[in-house]
Image 1: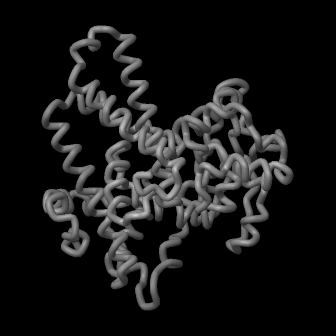
Image 2: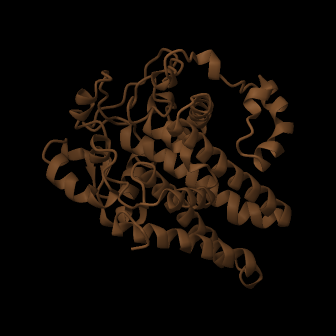
Image 3: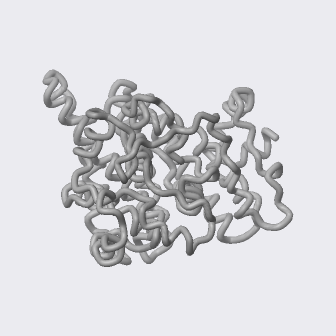
Amino acid sequence: MLGLRNNADLRPVIWVCKYYLISYLAWTYEDYFRHSYLLSFLTLLVISYYSFAGATITHNTMHSKVFHNKWANRIWQVLLSLTYGHPVSSFVPGHNLSHHRYTQLPQDPMRTSKLRFRWNFLNGLLFQPIVAGDVFKADVRYINMQSKINTARAQEFYTNCMREFSFVGLTTIILLVLDPRKFFSYVWFPHFFAQWGIVSMNMLQHDGCDVVPSLVREDAMDNWNGSRNFVGPLINYLTFNNGYHTIHHIHPTMHWSRLPEEHERVVKPKIHPSLDERCMARYIFRAFIYPGKRLDYRGKEVKVPTDPEPEDVDWTQDYAPDGLKPQDYQVDLSWRGIIRALPLIPFKLLSPLYSPVHKIN
């Protein structure tokens, strides 16, 4: 059906279509509801959910392709990028290659140990803003590294990133120029919420869980208590089974539709019972609001180290070919480097394969 590899992916396709339809209706017919605070709030809430749903679909897509046809997947990735305002190919370095392989280790830029507020509410609220910069830096290094590798796979990944970046960038500029207020209301805010939500899931699913200090794949697969699962039917319907996290870490490429069954069969008999949370909303309230204590899955207080959090260990070199050194693909992300790059952004949007990185250096 529609060239789908799995018929269950018809629902994500419908969800993405609904995002575009609802966003179009809100933008076009705003005059019919803008004077009602309730209708305006409900509209923003619905668009924000569908944008967040696009982020969960992106997560599933970057682990398991949706279409048989290569160009269909490329178009799908562009459409997904526009649902939550971020090139979806960056999920590969930011999530697949770093977080999955080095969960909660110094190579994981999304490790929860970076959050050390005494008030756990702030740990949950500010997790995404605090880790986002480190994730972005690693993403840029990896993408630039791929641009320098002369293989079909590396060049295809780099091209996909640039294509998605171009569509997101150009669409953002056009909508911002057309109507700045509508842009921030119906595009920017839902996209921000989606990015905040999908990254914050990491705090919910890994904080207070076991950490395997080994990088050996077999050892990581035996870490049954390394993830918290949210197994309620509603949250998993809304997020396309993103609540089943342990089985996802064990089998990252398993299709999302199989996760509940495999969780019951493989994971549930082996994990600590407290790591099967029925309701995400109740867990959020208990962990971050009242009593708001940062506890591990055994009910003990999470002990935050007194030493400063160590710098991230650069994991990108693990994927670099022989002869390519980190200094060969480093990007200047200081304020000075960013300012120098700004005049080159229009060229990048108009010509995705043009590399300002080379020009800056």
